[in-house]
Image (cartoon, rainbow, N blue to C red; front, side, top):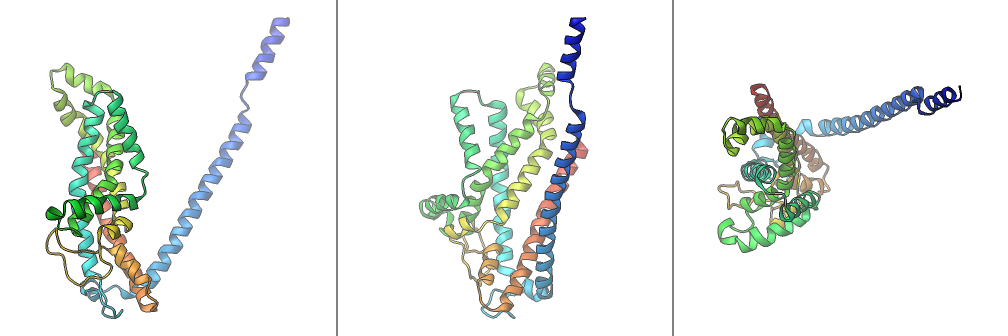
Amino acid sequence: MTSLIKDSSKQELFRPNLSKRYTMERILAILAWGAISIAILVLAVLLIDILIDGLPSLNLEFLNNLPSYKAERAGIKVPLLGTIWVMSLVAAVAFPLGVGAGIFLEEFAEDNWFTNLIEININNLAGVPSIIYGLLGLAVFVRILEPITGGRSIISGALTLALLILPIIIVSTREALRAVPDSLRLAGLALGATKWQVIWEQILPLALPGILTGTILALSRAIGETAPLIVVGALAYITSLPTNLQSSFTVMPIQIFNWINRPQEEFHHIAAGGIIVLMVVMLVMNATAVWLRNKFQNKV
């Protein structure tokens, strides 16, 4: 009888309080939805304000005109082309280097103190302020490699931004590779395939959607950066179109910042129009990457 009482008391002691758990779950869900709603509301207010100010200035003349000290003649053609040049080169440099480094560290590198040190440094570099990368680009690409890069040029700015987003791409690549089950690797090796054949034909296609997701986030960060480009030498006001990778350049965030700093109200309106153009370029770039990701997902 005593043992039965003890057993029942133990059951009462370890019986979960389901009502309390469900109440906490509902409270946390309400808080989460409230935080999301506030964020969406603030974003919607900002977007509506930008659209109201910027849509009247959006026309073909605004897209084709060169920058000017007069608001009615100012256009965004030069920074738009500069942004396209820079981001194209950033993607061409950062994507293969980042994915290649991630594959090597995750699949081929031995687990020792040296690779652990590299992994720690890569994770730390992902949180380094962008201005530090600008100083690095100024020292290396602008000054030391000036005979190759042309100094304060498109290629110097693009290489600096590529260094900025490399840690993000490397980390996302490694995480995407880890998500692929090891059974696929063992099955490929058991059938006589080499390690590289297994990775190239089996592992990488499955991990590619995750890799592209990380690349989208990295490029979205790079397209809005101004501090490293200002340090490297991007100009706030330039009226000549870029002709090669060693040309002087500016990008849309710098041009928008330049317009916003002007006291005339007209420049604030065309700055809002520049923000809309920048968002469109970013959405087109991200939509292309999402389309490629979904294409590979469907193929797999």
